Image (cartoon, rainbow, N blue to C red):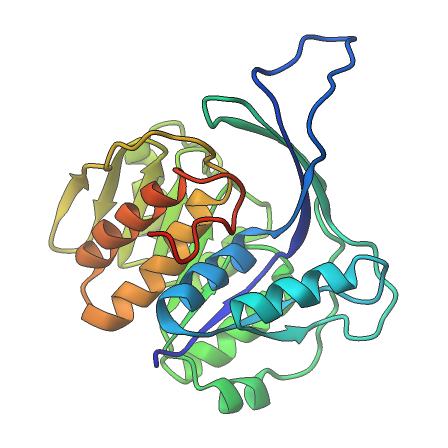
Length: 285
């Protein structure tokens, strides 16, 4: 079994399925919504666990009325949780997701509150012994502490760059693999070439930009090219990018080949879009 540690956000997603996105000032009647556990690092951990038989997640859950939903999901997906807010009162991060018939989605959510973490992550890394760490940029203070300890141990670090966050200049120099979405735009960057140049200035050796259903761009010290994305009949794209990152971690540990891991992760992520929600694809692809 491979060993990976996923660090970042866990959310409760309230997903409504509609034929098309509504106009303003109308009430839309739908089927009852699905309650889904989500978040970039959490969904990535789930994909890794599906392929691997288990995964480790560090996030902030705390104590609130929705805790049983998280516990049930982690149990069903074999996620071992380290809660940064264990037994502390907390406000859960909720996301309202509107998914249209063509699989596109609009999400309303909010950023989590920062978690003060002044303890060393040494004992956790001793226990898990991860071969790779993936972080999504949330809880930056604790994330930096984790990455600094990981760098001392020469554990590779992958970064899910969904969107630019102001604290990333402190975090990015610690990263080995930066896999960013097309929406990831550092200050002064508009094109993919400019994003690659920025990441190169942070001394990140392996970089990629995902672009939804379009090809994946990647750059290493030896190569710069793109990878075609498999076309599928899209039912729901929610979580596909997150699953890509989790699958990348698994396939990279299998082959230690950056481009091969990108290609195989892309195939899995595309297949998850054939199913509604973020868990119904499990055991079906």
